[in-house]
Image (cartoon, rainbow, N blue to C red; front, side, top):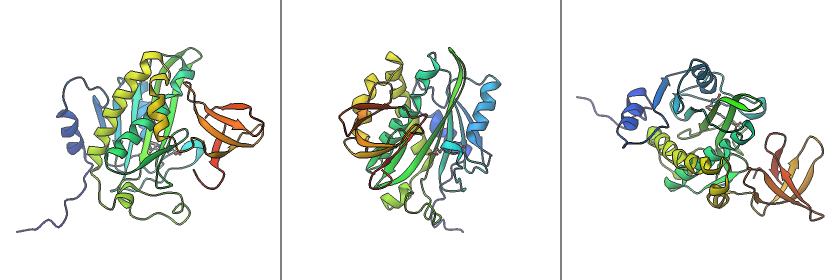
Length: 277
Ligand code: BTN
């Protein structure tokens, strides 16, 4: 006979489907699953599905992306066999400017799910998940909307789960959950957990279509809170102390002169004064 030395971490369609089908009643995130062993970008797949009428809760998952995309036009390295790459489709009944906050809602859900694995997770505003000072997850939210009507929102999430080594250019700032925990993590279980946390957070978000009900939870993960930050605003860089976020998801930065600046994620990026966070 054969002996299986280690059970392979399949993140195949059957494994994901059976986990999602076996959860209880009332779940909607992942109600329709689209799985590709390999694809260009799950955000692009999700946008295409949305254009073709796919419902809210459609979840696109892949094991490998050939043209994975990050924020600010960067690429997102997406090797096969180790990580999670997925995109959730939403059709929120709110204003386009409110939908921008959904990226923070997903960050919170991902942080909560990572924390449940026993790994200390933090959020670097607005939506990087960080473990022990290095990035483990990035989120790219895209929207198709008219000035006062949203066609759809796609929230794409890339999580370094079981990747064991990183290219030199990013090894100082990137890590994986397995490296931080010292053991492999089952990707499909983590995906389900993130979706369940997202459903709960999204319910709270919908109470007011802003982050009011999520502020305490978000702040409990926010690494920038009371930390010195450098705000790379195209209109002029400045330093200050981050005090937290408001209900619109803007970072509140206290400048040297005491003025409280509201920093909006779309235009600027924020760096720690002493390093990445
Ligand atoms: C970032 O720059 O931090 C955001 C990275 C987002 C990567 C994910 S992987 C799944 C989805 N598909 C993409 O092409 N990008 C997002």
